Image 1 (cartoon, rainbow, N blue to C red):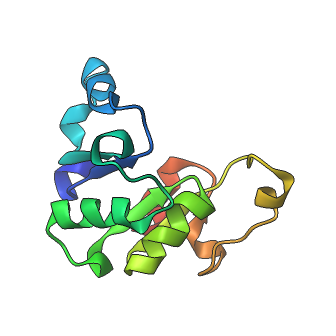
Image 2: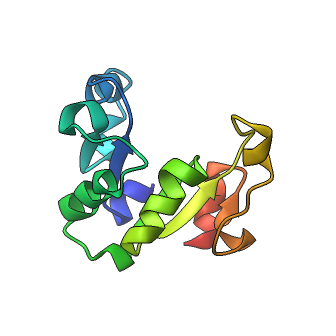
Length: 120
């Protein structure tokens, strides 16, 4: 289980109740904390949302791995802070998104969440 070896944060553009949702499904315990756009007043792709997560982990950005499903809203802002970022790439919202590639190469693009283990 990742959360026993790595402190995990959830950074999300959500409606102000993601913490409650995580608790309702008994998964909140796996996260050190939750940074939610509706609560902190800043939305992705603003890197400030990720900076709050990095600061809460009390780690330098260079030691933080971000896993996100949006190149524009997750990967690019995380990389701008100096984090490592893995793109969980599925079907994009637009045809243009489907043709995009990770700025640091295909090594950091995965199709299934379980593939994170192969990278770390």
